[in-house]
Amino acid sequence: QVLLVESGGGVVQPGRSLRLSCAASGFTFSNFSIHWVRQAPGKGLEWVAVMSYDGSTKYYADSVKGRFTISRDTSKNSLYLRMNSLRAEDTAVYYCARDPNAGTYGYDYFDYWGQGTLVTVSS
Amino acid sequence: DIQMTQSPSTLSASVGDRVTITCRASQSISSWLAWYQQKPGKAPKVLIYKASNLEHGVPSRFSGSGSGTEFTLTISSLQPDDFATYYCQQYNTYWTFGQGTKVEIK
Image 1 (spheres, each protein chain N blue to C red):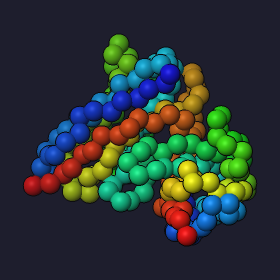
Image 2: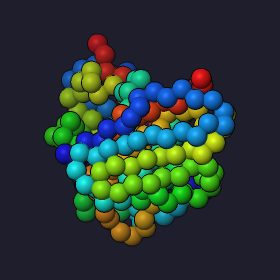
Image 3: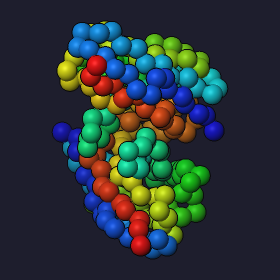
Image 4: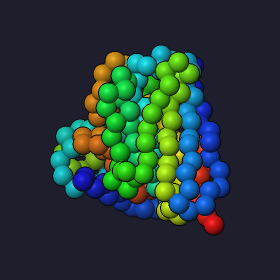
């Protein structure tokens, strides 16, 4: 079955960096676009970033542009989110989520989500 | 940027009630709208995509309607498992979520 497992969260001081991972299984990773979505404690969902299925296209939310970088390693079926210059407002559970369409890139909904990893930015 | 506004923010209802949640977009998004259900400590789960299409495995008591800027999610007969928070999401241009509607026990 389709499985997405996030890791790498933790407590980090403001201004520092952290890298999150999303390990995929149960489907052909290189055929699907994957997103990062976050949720601050007690708040709603915020889309963060996406990498297209072929790795050619990356988009970021304005709130993280220039600080966060999305990447992937298809040999490890893994997606990453490098987060630099972290701020208190980046504190959230970070989810990876899959686009439902194989081999295409466009705007679509998210059909599978991981369980999330908590990032806390605090001194 | 496209803004999504849900109403109400909280809804108190009883088992068996018909429940309707509204989502409004700040500009037309055609039918590019999804609905998700989220329970505490869990990831969101898609219920409806393209405004009115039921995701595989989702009970038929859930339905969606609308196009353009106004959309609704209806639960025809609320079940104990349905008490959760519901989010709409537009995917016409990038991705934006509504602020959520918590369905709680009356």
